[in-house]
Length: 461
Image 1 (cartoon, helix red, strand yellow):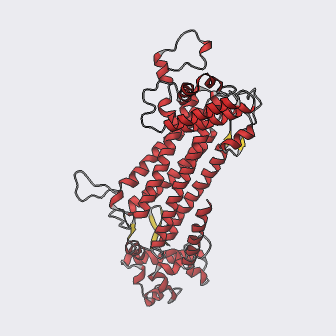
Image 2 (image 1 turned 90 degrees about the vertical axis):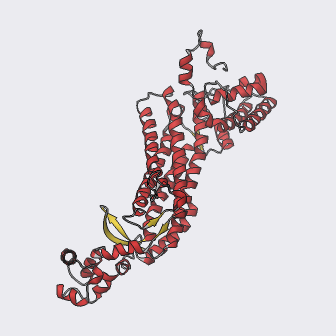
Image 3 (image 1 turned 45 degrees about the vertical axis):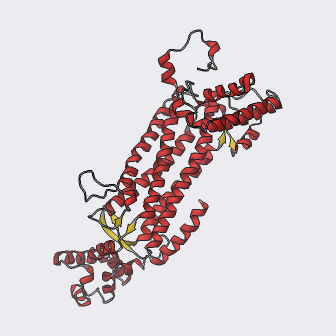
């Protein structure tokens, strides 16, 4: 094992179990490439303050470049016993560059190095998450355009409430994922701040141009307080919070489509490619892709809780507890990105059976609100309109008549407020839908406009 950076303070060796207990290479090796990129930038900063000569900086930067290439080979980490990825990289640097490698840590604390590496890695993970979310959103818009005029029941309390257009339903999820992308962008802005130059907690004793280092590594700004940097994992929690809400929305979509693809609903048909069968029951076609998305939410929610609770009682500034940030963060990112990609594939391959939800709308009383509102437009106070519409619903239920089965004469006999205009409202829920022209409503004109705007917005997210 490589000599530890703090070895001069200690006379005895570490307990072997403690070494194993505190080792993090098996998971933080994911930071390998960003650790190298950050160290190359730091070598250039060391040259700028006179710690490294141009030749020494060139030797170190070149050696790091070779290590980065070699690290792509399978099995590169096999047999490594280093404490963490940072120790591993330094050992490899010393093997290539020799004694000059010992200068690379001048004026740099492991605390700021870990923060830098995590931020560099997380910037990429956020972009991956955003790309995956936008791919799903694009898939939802394509699915909406396949069935532009399909009418489906909208639900409250899992009871048929009012009819809406299928694209209107899908645009609801589009809005959810739009907010998720916005939150991810906000998280990215807080991640994209350079911590290097903060030292362990008190700031560096070397006159680094932190703005120049930030520009070198593509950061938008520098951190403002060295103590805050040392104890901060808010930026990781920001991403994980956004990931949690994304997964929450994915879970709701999965739950909807699990129900809607069941025999009891029969609206949707999932493709064979995203479904599984039963080891015992030959007839089964199970929505395993959606169930796995729904199930993986627990892992992401748990990861967020784990880091949140880890951070809640820590005193200023750095504490070794904070090493426990990586695995929850990696888990949250891996599962969120994978679930978004899986959901996009499901959306690309799903089939809607429009006649089934349309029949459900026609057979139920999703037009009841349309009736009440039409009565109010005719001059009846809404409280009375609501009661009269409710009485008609009850009459239909008791007599076993669907809304579309009422004739004009029957309606007029039931109550004179029901003119012949009401026959059309009862016979086709789209007539009621057509009145909901406000922005955000389900009228065909509003939905068509919203769909067009969504296609434009996705490019600017």
